[in-house]
Amino acid sequence: MISRFKPAVWVVAPCADAVACQGLAFSYGVHPIDCAEEPDSWHDFAAGWLREHHLPGHIAMLVAGPSTRNPDASHRIEFLRIDQAR
Image (tube, helix red, strand yellow):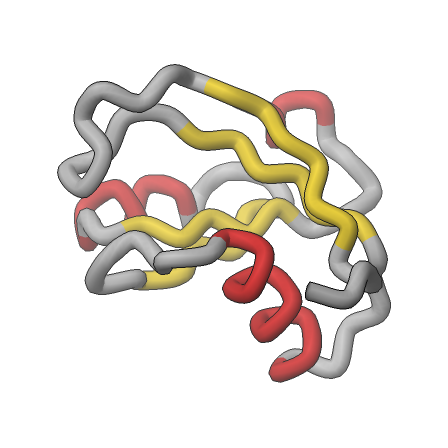
């Protein structure tokens, strides 16, 4: 888990499982978000979340894997440029 490295930045964890969200709340520096379903665009989700919380940030790191929406997805780490026009 990324939080064990105690990063200097927030770890925001959208999750559809309430029990998992509760467990994530006890991880260092993790801010769990109860998310009913996976967003269509992680880029738009990250940009909107930063804007909504008035936080600076130009890069978000997405760590994702299989989900109920995409059960055959691979585990991946992706950097999202938030300041990029879409």
